[in-house]
Length: 134
View 1 (cartoon, rainbow, N blue to C red):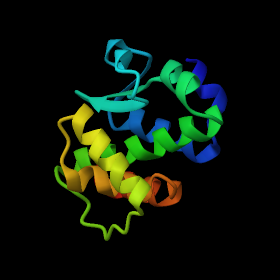
View 2 (view 1 turned 180 degrees about the vertical axis):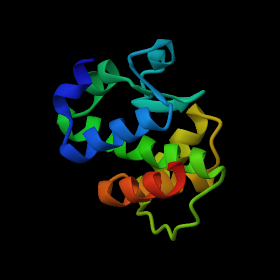
View 3 (view 1 turned 90 degrees about the vertical axis):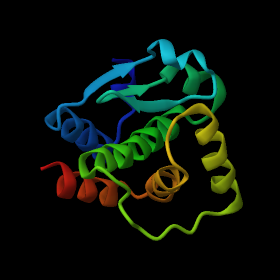
């Protein structure tokens, strides 16, 4: 998959942990038809919408990794079976991103807020996946 070319070491580790936790990893599936979607978790499948990232945001490598970190939070939440119960302190832009994500998914506001809070903290995402998935 082409998006592997953009991954940081932390994003590679999150992908490896996702695979160990029995998630499939795909790129550009049919649900990527919504051009605003850059990644999602559905039925234990992590999908990166690389075409949407390439066509809407820049730099591509930054947003591919941010998407992996964000979706990694949802993997940890899925393994735990609930929210992570972390403190969130989102700026106005990220609060708007939460609302946009809720329109495109069946997630909860708390789950999305946690994912946006941690999407720039890959080491914490890795810690939560390890804690709740293994």
